Length: 286
Image (cartoon, rainbow, N blue to C red):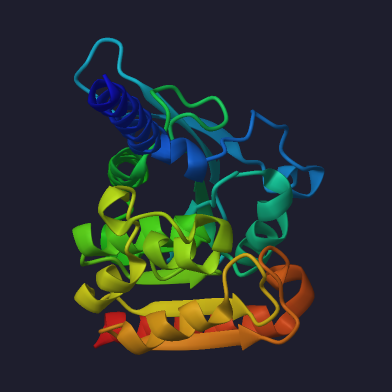
């Protein structure tokens, strides 16, 4: 009788553990992505007359899931276009100053909303899906605006940096890669965030291994990070810089946080970006 009771207790405990692990496995992406609702564009950006565009994920399908994006055409002298990939929330308040800096440099910018963000359709995002979304944006720019990958800069902020690094591996002819406030890997982030330090590595399938991706890529990369960033430590950008295989530049901003670099750094941010544009231009002429 006692043995039977013990077996029932062990079976019950085992079932609870298995259910817990299954919940973590299945709900992992919901711990990472926090899609923002559709928001109006800030007035400061409306001056650039952006156009709302839609990107079909399955162009041949009758009812293809579609991604919402905003196209900011610019009449500047620069030949470069930027594909901007936002972080976990994708709010305009976190993006506005960054876009204003890019547009002031004469760059055209496509701001992508991953599936589940803004008014984009499709199931809840995960690593595989958002990387496919970024590839669809590259295809859209090539088809609709005749922008080849060697004239395209991919800019990823925070989580968007991991997506951008993956895209640079899939699109090795990209003109350049910009990583701002990006982490080295999701595993490193679980260790940095003490409340997730218990998370077993074998259970982590949303890996976002930015460090491995920059090691494999020869695309020129600019890495920006605020030294006072409490969301993602600046040491992770140093690790990315050391690992990057291609031409690379690193700009660390004293007192810079996770979302305020363009506004706080001002001219220094702009100068770092201009130096990178010069590097990209020189490489394209070589």
